[in-house]
Image 1: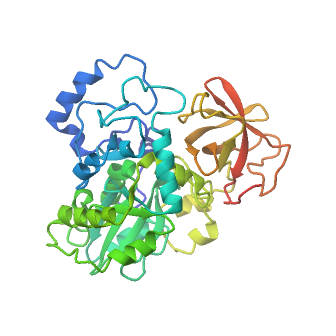
Image 2: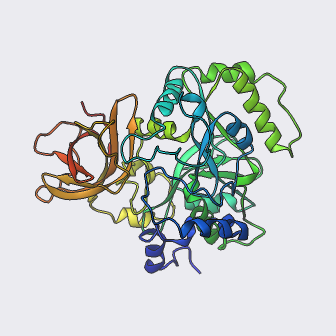
Length: 430
């Protein structure tokens, strides 16, 4: 069986139907106790569904080693795509709301406008910009690949050179045969032909499945693939003082038994917390990511060139999955954009949630894939892939403001002028 033996229909199922693909679930979702609890609530969900609303049954399916500590510090948890409980925001960072419910909207707080956690997330954002914030990232998917042929196997799957020193962090991506993304990921070379692949939590199942399919072309003694997500916790420090803080505590005695990962992580978290680090949730992290215009968020059905990757850089690697399709991609018919909504009132207007239509000169040209209020810009920012203009084939402003190309985004029936803040080339527009 050749490495390119996947049918077009199979690739279609893996991408076009991603929102209904069974790979969006993980094995934990099949546990009897989870299903018994979740179905009780599912039958009663025929009420108003507010944005950011969380299920309350079948929770704590998978928790971080820091879950108890975060809960004690006032975390309000959201259910991650791979079953993990992740902190959305912290009650302790906002006065006036008590942590009576760590898993949902406080009574009377459901709204389609500015969410109840807004002020708390803004304070967490400020901590990341002015001092140091700490975020639990244990939900990140972690896949270990090892064996005599692991380098050959993994190098075929990613478009970046993984022949790097042990401990290097390689930002890259995996592609299907048709050149569209499986996932964005990071590869960390370890010792003795071993690699650790990190990917977004939402991509855990399909990343594991894709690697296993390609590893099957090698003997089991040559390449082994293991999901080690639950075996490794992770925390992230963000802020201008993060490096100084890390250097100040790194000399402390935090070494414990290598088989007690949870205790090691909790010890590190405790030391950092005692040093004045502020807990930060994923709503504030999303705002930080949306403000970072250096790289787009990779989404389904898009090729690297549509996401702004330089083909000259990609093709330095002689062979990788999807390269033939990219070589045959003569035209790029859509590009990644980020927009700032003008005249958007954060307090009274309905907030976008994704899926809103984007118009260019009154003609539909794409949909919003991600959105967040960015505290530093004091603006609602939306991102999406925009199709080429019908008359001239242009899909970006080429780094210059152009009055002939203007966009609007419809949110709850209201049109907002959308200023391009980043083109696919990563250029900030004034």
